[in-house]
Length: 183
Image 1: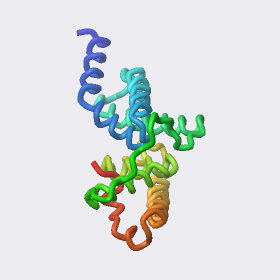
Image 2 (image 1 turned 90 degrees about the vertical axis):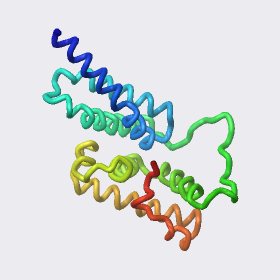
Image 3 (image 1 turned 135 degrees about the vertical axis):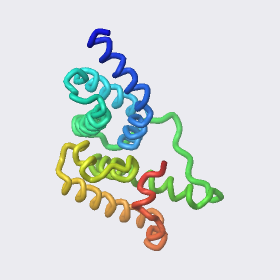
Image 4 (image 1 turned 120 degrees about the horizontal axis):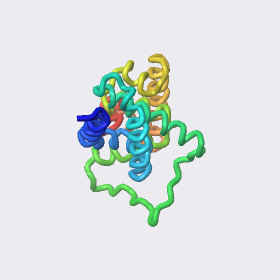
């Protein structure tokens, strides 16, 4: 089999195996299904172009996650995104008869979406994708100390926002590090 055909086959296998996980991570970073799909497609395009240069195809996922992260950050910077999206109808308000955990997840999800993109990205990679600090730093193209400070600042903002939304006592009941992003 020629090298180019083999590369295409390996890339197709990679996409089939990992695209849903990559999409989930992208969605958590941007909070919009369509934007996450665009983000994954662009990152996969970058990965496909770089595929012959990758020394080990097992590094493809890390390369793609880094491409997702850097592309999302550049999109937000370029567009000056302000977290507003047009919809046909307003989202429903949480109903009081839902279970408390569902309400907490909704409040936490909303607060997470209000974080700056680097803080949200650090929290998503660290606590949802369960990457180490070093892996998160590599994906974000920054130092481990930056990951720590972004996570710390993100959690501080989440606590403040939760205190504003549900009150100080109720905000203390949120276990941010285990519920930062719910699967």
